[in-house]
Image (tube, rainbow, N blue to C red; front, side, top):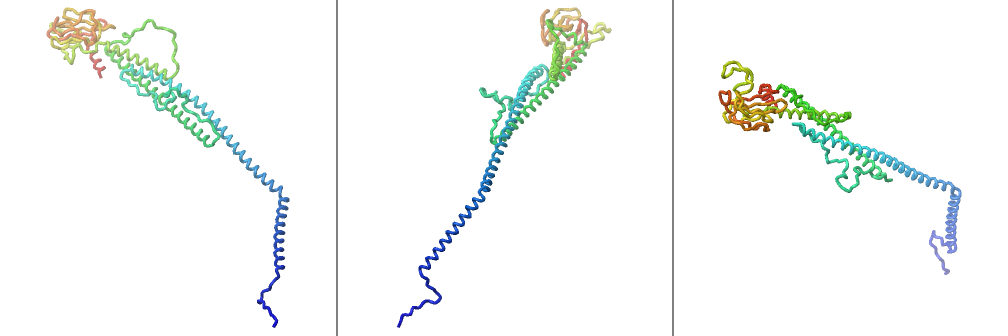
Length: 400
């Protein structure tokens, strides 16, 4: 029987030659597509080349302009900050120079105030010296360092540094302003102090003048004109503090002069303690005649031998027996003032001797025209007896 080949249904067997032709067609298609794409890209590049290049150049130019604008802004910021620092530095230098000048003037004033406060009795100067916590020149504490109390930062292109420099300058300005306020306060305190010294001295002058007047003395009798002085009159400046100082100096000097006068007056008690008064100054019944007579002193009851003391400094002019006074000591205190101590039992001084206030001049007794142990004490102005109580009352007022 002949061989019959059977094929599976639905499957066609192609020859090998046909299969290789199909692969070739596919490769040619891919190559054609690639060539077409390249040709399209080349055509697009050729057509749009100028536009792409122009866009690239525009982007580069925009970036360059941005950088240049930023650099210009930074340069402008640098120049403005530098100008601010130069202006601030010049202003601070001027203000610091003014502060140094003011500090020197205030220190000089402080010396005047200290002197016046020492001369003015009972007046204590408030502490107004310049504090050490913020000196005008901190370099003065460290020898060899540069005298630059407020260093100014150098300008820089860095924005943060520029801001820091401005902040430092601002803080420096605040420090200088603080110093200025402190000096203003010190000047005000010194003005108040000098005004207080002048007012206090003026009140002392009025009080002492009144006390001297109560004694019956004219303060002008104690004034002395110094010899060998002169020269042209140079008026003081119109500086308020200088005028206040001049007025205070006059008041303090006058008060000191009046105090010296008061110290030279016979204001102390001739017998220590509170010796009772047995007879006052003026008209009285005479203990011997029983008729009215003038009593020229003050009788102070004391025991025999008790010390009689000088009521003011002076020179002894008499230390001898003197009629009704008995044993008497007389002291010349100058300016027409004299005191007498009578009925003494003994002398403790000699004529011509200089005695200090409070010195013992003799001992209480009952010599002369006397009825018992006591001290007859007299005060005289220009040789005329005056009531010793005037001086004793003034002494009590001075002690108050």
